[in-house]
Image (cartoon, rainbow, N blue to C red; front, side, top):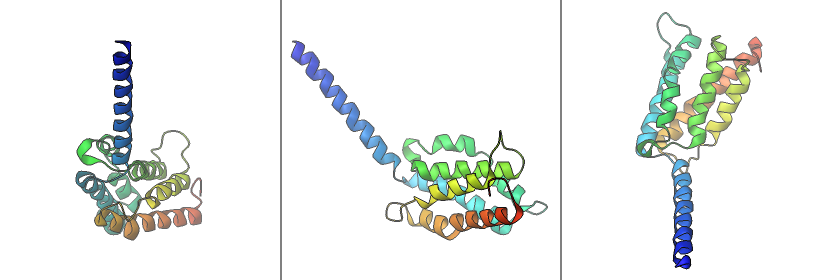
Amino acid sequence: MERDGIGKTVAALVAGICLAWAGAAAASAFTEGGANLWSTRAERFAHAFRDGTPGMSTQEALGQACEGIGAEMFKYGMYKTQVPNHAAQGFRRLCQGIDALNGQARGRVKICKEFRAARELFARIDREEAPERVVELNERFLLKMIDALVAQGERDGWPGC
C-alpha cells in the first residue's frame, strides 16, 4: 500500500512538473489574443510618436500611450492573451522611462537606462516565433522609436543617458 501512496505522489509530482514546463513554453510564445493586445499597445505608441495629439507634446502623448499599462500587464499572462515575458516587460520598462521623462517616476529612475532595457527586451522578440504584425511593429517602429528617444536623451542630457 505504501508503494501506491508513493507512486501516486511521484505521478502527481511528475504531472506538476510537466504542467509547469508546458506553462513556461506557452509563456514564451504569442497567442492570437496576446498578439492583438500587444499590437494594439504598440500602435498606441506609434500614433503618439508619429502623429502626436493636438495640444500635447510628444512626451505627453507618449505618457498618454502608457495609460493603463499596469492593469494590462496582468492580461499578458492570461490563457488567451499569452505574450512572452520579455515582450510584455519591454512595455513596462518603456513606460517607466516615459514616466521619468514626464516627471512622474517613483524614485530615481534613469530615463535612458529604462529605454535601453526596453530595447533589449523588445530585441528578444523572435521573428520565427512571433506573428508577422508583432515583428513588423517591433522592428519597423518600436526599436527605432527607442533609439530616437535615447539619442535625444544623450543630446539633451537626460538622467542615465
